[in-house]
Image (cartoon, rainbow, N blue to C red; front, side, top):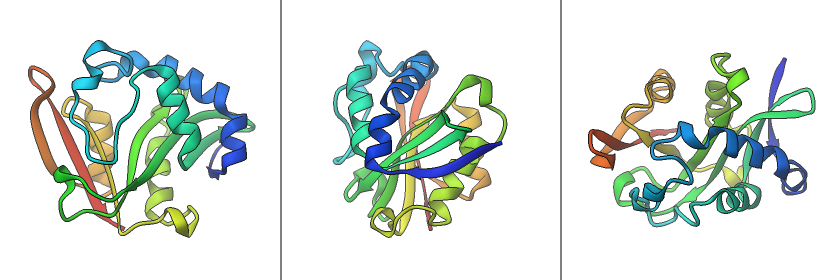
Length: 178
């Protein structure tokens, strides 16, 4: 059975190789791909961003709070988040615990793991220093599985940036009060 737990700084260092592998495996699942040339043009809030290569994502995941999904001792998914204090797209929904990246290993998808990662944030299963009045994230408009999870958990679409990802694919911001 997969368990969800907060991963402290020393454990994030130990899980660095697993984090990297999950990012590499999921790279092309994102729109645009995490390492795609167009990734740098996707709109970002004031506190978001950084390098758009795998090393940059690994560094951010290891340096930020993380919830892990573990099958025994194996990391099979995670949610990397941080405090977002200002964001034009999230006006009225900050300060927020902003989920920057959420990945579940393809072999473990459709088991409710992503929903459980969000529930852990919403139900305050993280240290108090990482809890904020809102939880927020952004995704792309054709990421129907992710959007279904967010809507099931009563997140609201609070901003839509048309064609931000590519023609016909919008960036959509979701948020909710905890």
